[in-house]
Image (cartoon, rainbow, N blue to C red; front, side, top):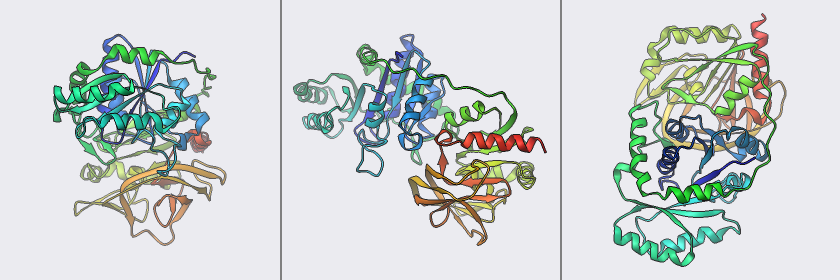
Length: 451
């Protein structure tokens, strides 16, 4: 299957991958191409920007969560546009655990057999930029690097010094972007501020893209991304007949969802109805509820005031409605959220309190499911990830947990997945197609509808 494609990688975090990737997508669109974006790693925020500029939903590519075979299948089946553009994560060779290439951007470039454009921050160097570039080219026997973009260049003289040094290693320079604070995107948590937090950022990324694309050799980029080998076409996924409805929380507070997870639920026969715990007064008629991650602490005051919604969700849980919640969803289901020295009352389904902290908890997770729950009917291994700036305090001593973790902090002493009635809520995020999570969740929703 012919898929013109390219990976946009960085020498490190903070070199401008997202803004430059958005600019490349924008430039390709101006050339008449339709672009499908992908994001390496367990990231929910950067994909919002890629989707906003491309007008296509962004899919994640994470070898740890998905496995190599499923990752490649997802990439091929979702590459429906003229061109696929993959934004990398962290530094190009940074993989799981820090000393491994596994799950790194280079690993994903290798799996998808994609050429790579490497972004280098030139702001505090000149001739030494060539040593950095040469190191990335030689670090792995097949770096897949086909071009370099220099970012944060100080002047024409600075650009000339960098170009002269790089000419010795004969790697194409396909972009030289001047240093400009207006081209920086404001950060939040692990990456960028969600466009749900500030809608004007969608306009901002378009303005940034229009500026940056003037400094890119888009013809050379097109030449590189078209020089790719064919990938083996995968069979199309089979969608079951719709038999149940699952309500999905989606608004300013809850917007962290893998697109593949939503598609997995649809594939298993679920009709998804989206609603806002912030603005709506009631949940759509449904047989199951999915509350993803996000920033419930940002609009905690609005969530607290929506008493009808809180009471409705608690009543549905007590009625044994299948409910699955991750991270922000877990926080919403506790008794309260303490943020900036103010406590906001939440649903109170779980006898615990959420406290915002300054410490970021960022881990891939690995462990075992130790009891049956709304998304699993058997005991088995699990792999996922967690990232949050909160912790649960005052957890009831008789709380029941679904996961034991070997890797990851979880909620309490390497335990995660609180269970109450037919509700499962965890700090950890799962990729549904890494097991039969979607199938079991939909099955439980169908059973609930037959009561």
